[in-house]
Amino acid sequence: MSDDQPSYGFETLQIHAGSKPDPATGARQTPIYQNTAYVFQDADHAARLFNLEELGFIYTRLLNPTVAALQERVATLEGGVGAVACASGHAAQVMALFPLMSPGDNFVASTRLYGGSVNQFNHAFKHFGWEVRFVDTEDLNAVRAAFDGRTKALFCESIANPGGYISDMEALAGVAKEKGVPLMVDNTTATPYLCRPFDFGADLVIHSTTKYLTGNATTMGGMVVDKGTFNWGASAKYPAMSTPHASYHGLNFAETFGPMAFTFFSIAITLRDIGMCQAPMNAFQTLLGIETLSLRMDRTCSNAKAVAEFLERHEQVEYVSYAGLANSPYAARASKYCPKGSSGIFTFGVKGGYEVGKKVVDNVKLFSHLANLGDARSLIIHSASTTHRQLTPEQQTAAGAGPEVIRLSIGLETAQDLINDLDQALKAATA
Ligand SMILES: *Cc1c(COP(=O)(O)O)cnc(C)c1O
Image (cartoon, rainbow, N blue to C red; front, side, top):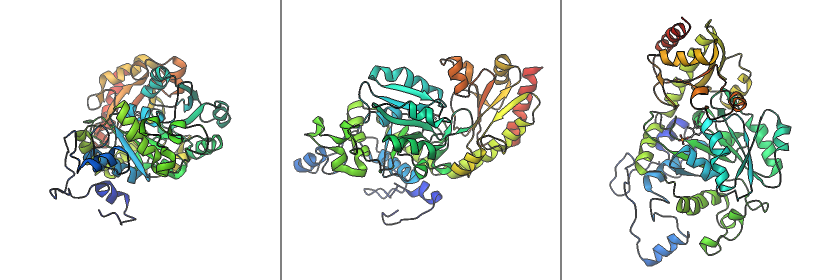
C-alpha cells in the first residue's frame, strides 16, 4: 500500500496497512526479520539514530521491521498516530503507565476488569509505588471523587472481561478531560473491528494481541496505541514527557515530538530501559491473524449470540450476561459502541452455584477448559475457582465473577455443536 491512500475500508487495511513488499527482496508477505542489530550507514548516521533525529533500526529491543509492520497495522486499524508493541498485554499495561507515573502517583480504574489486571494493578504495581483506585464506573461522581492531585490516568475496558459489560467510554472520557488525564481503554475483547475507543474520546488504547488479534492461541503479545491528541505539556502532571529528559541530553519529548511524543517515549525510554519488547516471530503470527480479523469477529459474534440465546432459555441457567442479547442492560451501549456485535466473551450463572459450576466445566467435551480467550476454539472456565481465585469475594462479584459464574469464549465452530455440548454438560452437572 502506498502512503498516499487515504480511505481504504477496514477489510483492506487489516491486510495491507503496514505491509509493503519487502524493499530488499520484493517478498510480498512481511518477512520475519529474526535479527538483533542493524548496520549503520556511517558514524554520522549512527549518531543521528541515537539522538532520535532520524528514526531507524538500531537494535530489536527498540524497533524491528516485522514488529514495526504490526505496529503500523494496529495503529491504522484503531485510528491512532502511533503504536508500540511489547511482549504481552500485561507488559502493555506497564508500557501505557510508565511514562506517566512516578512513585506516589495513582490512577483510577474500573472494577470490571480482566482478573489478571486487577492483580497486576493491586499488587505488582505497588512495587513501583503506583497506587490503583478501583471504582464502579457506572457512578461518575464516584469516579470524580477518586481523583486527587496525583491521579495520572483513568483506565477501563471497552467490552469488559468477563461479564458482558460495556463501559460508557464517552462519559468516562468526559471525566478524564475535566481532570486533565488520559482515558486508557483496554480494547482486547472488542478489537478495533467491533469498537474504536478513539472515536469516543479515549486517548490511549491497550491490547493483549494474544487474544483475538492473533486469533488462534499461538502467540503472546501486547500493544499500546496513541491517538496523538493528548497534550502532555498542558500541565505539570507528566514531567517525564514534558520536561528535559536526562537520558537524552535534555530532550523534551512533548515539545520535540508533539503528537508522536508517547510513541517515541515508549520506544526510546520504556522499551530501551524496561526491555519488554515483542519477538519478531510473534509479530509475524499476529500480522497473519489480523488479515482475517473481520471475518473471525463476525463469526465469533454470531456464534456467541446463538449460544447466549440458547442458554437464556435453558432451565438450568439462572441468567446470561451478554451485551449482545436484546434484554441486556447494556444493549443500548452495545448498539452505540459496538454495533457490529458484542464479541465472543460472556458469562452465565448456573443454578446450584460453585459446585455445579465446577461440574459443568468437568463435563464439556468440545469446549476446552482453560484460562484464555479469543481462540478459534471455544473455551470455558469457572472464574471463581480459577482466573478470579485470588480476588476477595467482593472483588469477584464486582468483576462479574461470582461463585455461580461460568465464562465462555466462543470460537468459530458450528454453533449447533457448541449448543449441544453445553446442553449435555449442564444436564450431566445437575443429574
Ligand atoms: C489477556 C488479557 C490481558 C493480559 O494480556 P496477556 O497478553 O495475557 O498478558 C489484559 N486485558 C485483557 C482484557 C485480557 O483479556
